[in-house]
Length: 82
Image (cartoon, rainbow, N blue to C red; front, side):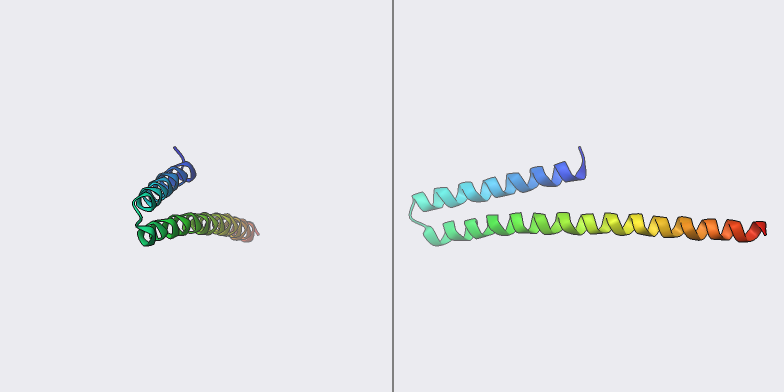
């Protein structure tokens, strides 16, 4: 299982649990706690999207650093041959 699939599954589980709690709490007239659970579910989704964006930025930075290291390595090998 990939990290993306794992984090998506955990996020779906957490959001589902929070939304279920929100519905059940609303059914017994605990609207404030239901709203808290609903906000928690929304924050969980927002946090997951932020996490995915940060991981994508890290992957892009890692690729860029790898390209820079390769270019420096090629430059050093070229310099030694001369």
